[in-house]
Image (cartoon, rainbow, N blue to C red; front, side):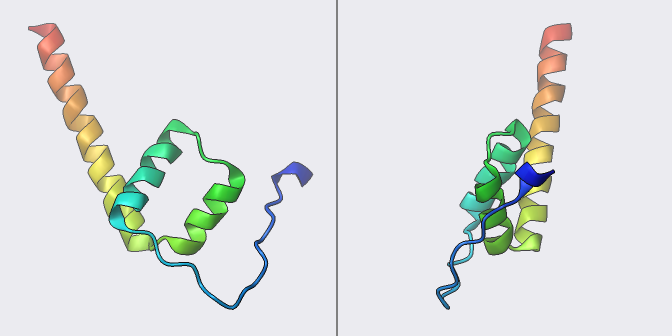
Length: 77
């Protein structure tokens, strides 16, 4: 597990701006696909709001489920 270490950025005394809802939604989708690097995930966790992540994940989950329902109904008809 020594390879799982994440380098912390140097402390500048300035907090990065929080992620917008659009950026939060994009990290949820990228996380589902599995294309985020460890450094990017660490940055996301530092900047993202837990409530926004929950809402973005719920929205994404709803879209995927509704899309699958529509797809199955279309294929089975």
